View 1 (cartoon, rainbow, N blue to C red):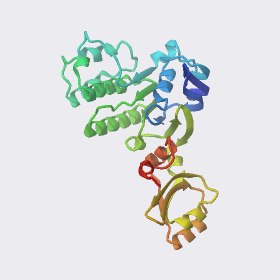
View 2 (view 1 turned 120 degrees about the vertical axis):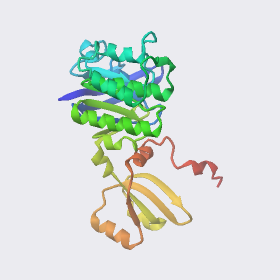
View 3 (view 1 turned 90 degrees about the vertical axis):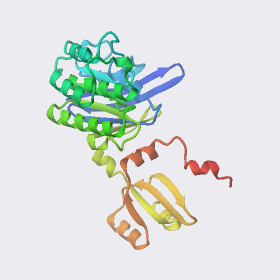
View 4 (view 1 turned 180 degrees about the vertical axis):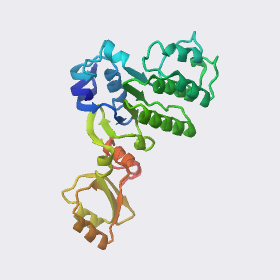
Length: 300
């Protein structure tokens, strides 16, 4: 079953296309990473899926319905981000107890165990928390709700490294014990790659790719060696990234479609062959400019 179906989905603000002609599906009980640079349109897309924003054109179905003003979607979905507004008249503990009324699968035991583990206090107020602690509390709500669709928009904003690692582990354990459809957005892939089954990569509102993590890992290969040899090898191939090292050495990240015989000959000609980290590949694919920062300082 597809939990999400989008066809030529667009959202326009004035003269700006925040997202444009996005078509994709997301199956149930998968963790999908929505990856893109800041300003790529990730939050706009997620808010449309959550029913917070109305689409401009195209089609969108979440749990078989248009999510905008859908009671079915709102009762089976939770949207977590760092802009969440929670009642200031309630303490954190009271918020957790109140959540039981809104989420039919709410697990109070889990919520309280996470609450104690991350050192929250019963009488604290949401508005008094630091940015990192606020994100952590929001994450507790997202995990404990156990909704069919859980949307996490940059959920670790402000968290320190150890808390982020604990959150990712908690998310994975919860998913294994209680499968659900989870979308987690980030502008970097390296920290969440091990959690994901699929990656949805967008750039400036456009869909670049939607692949499994395994497919993404096999998409590119790194080659480094004499510039003239590299140039000959990569003829007719899509180059995702190129960097000149020294006077006569080039590194390229290029589509991985070489026969083994050609790679063997390349090694014999002194070419170093390496894998391309998925995080690096996503950065290369979403670069807004050609070349690197060194080109800014090159006056030749």
